[in-house]
Image (cartoon, rainbow, N blue to C red; front, top):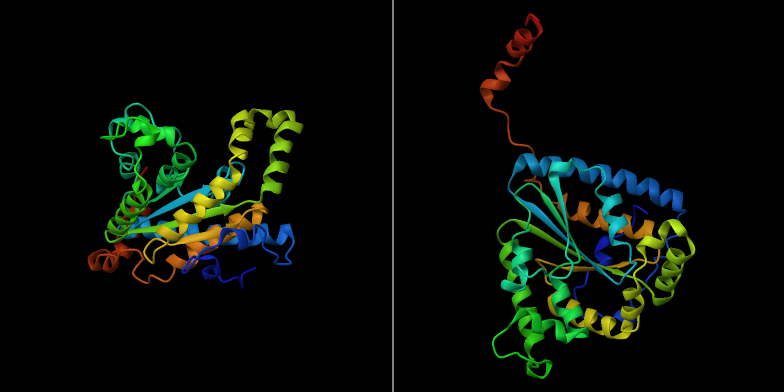
Length: 294
């Protein structure tokens, strides 16, 4: 598993979603994959500690995928070894009335990570060029000038948003934010099995949402719009990675390894140098503490 080159999952040219595998045939056992994941997430946690002390960079991880693609459990498993102060997770649901009083990127701007920290977007600003294309009536809630009905939506609105998103990501990357975008690529067959498991197991019934079946009817539309969005916005400073997601454990490992392999290349991510005076007097400080009376 460690021999996998995560760059193989990066989109650098034309992306055809119909040709992208939803399962990675690697020959390793689930136990072996989990063991390697544990080792990688420990390494990632240590690297995050260095980033926190370094205080120059931050990391934005965007997770997109169809319902049941495993975003929640991936977040839990990949970032398990992080210091709680070093990572914030945001689940972007239907915009609130307050959020709708601003442009569609506003709520994502204010959730960007502080220097030294990670932010994980469980669904992200890409919902604004995905779900709004499948359900264009959602655009009307934004109260955009000149758009009062679905018929008023200009044909070039989506291209404008792709450009705005590219500018947004370029701006933050130029200011010290590493941007990782992962599409958890799930097959329609596997989604069906996962939905059935939610219904078959009483303890998982709470996870089932009838709306998931309604969205499933738009499967091919979502696939089309994902492909268009990924092709329009996978850039060197903010690349998309297509993660085969039919096997959850492998998907988690690929995401963890991708982030770690990318960040470890930066040799300037290290703890700040200790003050010379402190170094010279370490023995004195130790002695003072050890001789301290209770």
